[in-house]
Every structure is written in C-alpha cells, then in structure tokens.
Length: 201
Image 1 (spheres, helix red, strand yellow):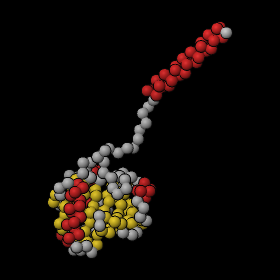
Image 2 (cartoon, one colour):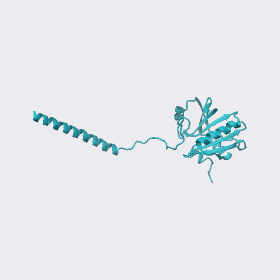
Image 3 (tube, rainbow, N blue to C red):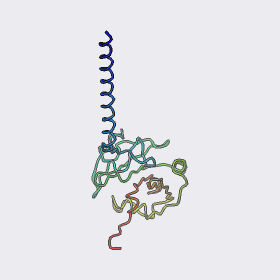
Image 4 (cartoon, rainbow, N blue to C red):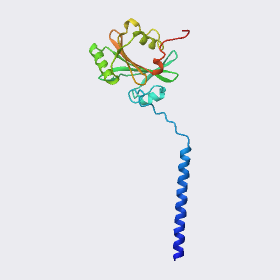
C-alpha cells in the first residue's frame, strides 16, 4: 500500500513538472513573437462625428456616417455629400466628405439662410471645443477649395473668416462664402500643409 501511494505521488509530481515546463516554454515563445500592429490612432488624433478619421476610405466613412449620401467625381477628388441635412449643434447643414486617392482629406458643413447670430453662435461653439479663434486668410480658404473645385469661391465673398488648429495639425475654418451662406471646413494635416501649388518655386 505504501509503495502504491509513493508511485501516485511521484506521478503527480512528474505531471505537474511537465505542465509547468510547457507553460514556461509557451511564455518564452510569446516573448519572441512579432508584436501585433494595430491601427489605433494617436491620442490627439482628430475624430469627426462618430469616429471618422483622416485617411479613411469611402467605405469606412459610409460605415460610420448613417445619413444616405450621393457620390460624384470632381477632377482627382471623390466627393460624398449627404442627401439630407445633418444636425450640427442646434442647426441643420449639408455635410460633404472629400477624398483624394480614396483617403479622406477634407470635410465641410454648409449652412444656408442662417442669420449673423447663428454664425456667431457656431463660432462660440467651435471655440469651446478647439480653443481661441484666429483670423483666417480668405486666400487660404480659396486655395483649399480650388484644389477640388476651381473658381467655386470668389475671394471677395469670403467674409469673417476664422480659423482654429488642433493638436494633430487639423485646420478648421468658419467663413461666409456668399452673403447668406456660411461653412465650417475641416482640412487634414496633410492637405493643410500643401494648400498652395509650389511647382517651380
């Protein structure tokens, strides 16, 4: 009986040592495996509406934006605009996504038939999110839009232009583009850094 009990104890110890050794080897293997690369954005990366980020393709944006959209091409750009109005703060606006090489580069909200008070209200709302506003150059706004749709804007109609910048380099503009319509335009860091054509300079 004693001999049988001793064998059982030895078998248990041997089994435990084997399992322990297997876990150790597995743990060592995990240390040397290649890290899994994720597409998690930097903590300060700009996020629009329900998590839309710069560089997303059209399908990724459609998956996050529930409003039905119409697609069209303008020169080297793909445009998606909402079929209906979307809610922005306490207002309704047309929402436009602009893609270059199937990567999101610019976004705009357009507000029609709004009052000067509405414009000031949205300026205050933007400041609470993005900090102090600065005066913007109408020529920069026109240069951004000309890259997509030349001559849509006339510089002399771009009024009361304001600008904000985020930590990741996103640029946000608020401006009138006609007498009774204004827009909020979001430009990606990549697009904002090359708004002017510099060939041959």
